Image 1 (cartoon, one colour):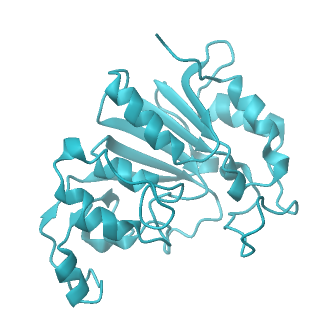
Image 2 (cartoon, one colour):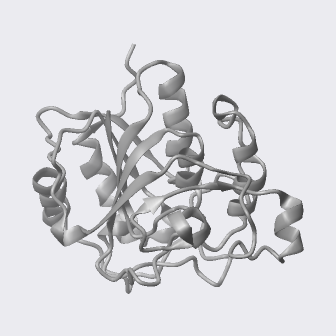
Length: 253
């Protein structure tokens, strides 16, 4: 199956970060969003979505909510795993900048795959809007990942933790999660270059495509759109109405 996962922060003039002022709930208005016609053109011409035949899915507030949507759809037998994922976002959402990689690599991957869905939601080291995609990969839900990224992304630096990449190389073209002993990681001060993994997860091919060059090659079985208000200014809010014209979020009996 083929899944489309879009974040509204992709449609901005620059890559946003969380405000240093924790009281700020939205990004500043100086950040310019795409126009409605540009957003519609991307959804229709680049992603193949249509207002005449909406794609099943959901529109969420925080991007990590799609993890739980996927889990429910899988449990209902409506979403088959592993699936091919197209992730359209200004961020990789694989935990760069938080401590989720330690929880994944030392605890989650030590569980049988069918027990890994019972993970904790946590802003620092659990499922959150910056890490949910790494947890989906840890659950072995994803067969291949196409990361449609913002044109301002520096590929050499990347925004995926090297520990999650094959050979710890951000340019390797494959994600390969690794199970480590917490004691071993602590002995080398969490330097994964010096630690030996207990086991390697199956590789997940990773294709990076700049948004201007992306073109969908197949129809999508489900589509998801995230508002991500902490990463977007209020000027993107019109996109929620636009997305609802292409995504059918009604429950399917």
